[in-house]
Image 1 (spheres, rainbow, N blue to C red):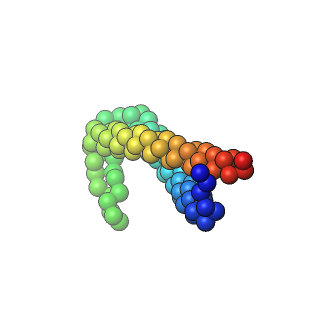
Image 2 (spheres, rainbow, N blue to C red):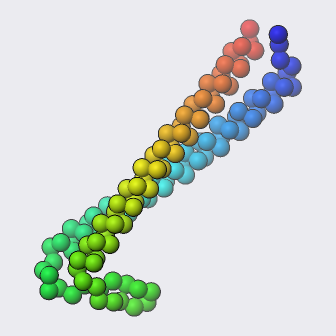
Image 3 (cartoon, helix red, strand yellow):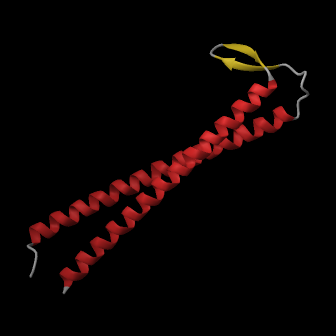
Length: 120
């Protein structure tokens, strides 16, 4: 039983579109992961610098166009919570990346199968 050429061509186009979309999303997710990893590195460096300060050192954080005095403990707590949040985001993005890579791989395999079976 053979599939008509028009239907086969339409099927291949749909699978190809799905593969292209998955590839684009893979690139976007990889860029987001890289960005979040840079942010984590910056937060870790800031945390290291803040830990080296003595407890009586005044620390100021930017708020809009102003700077406000903030206790060192509050700054450390904020840095740790932001780092934890970013790591959680990276974990979610890695799951999405795995799904997209699987989708892309499956789409490519389906296209190959269609061409191999049509060539017989």
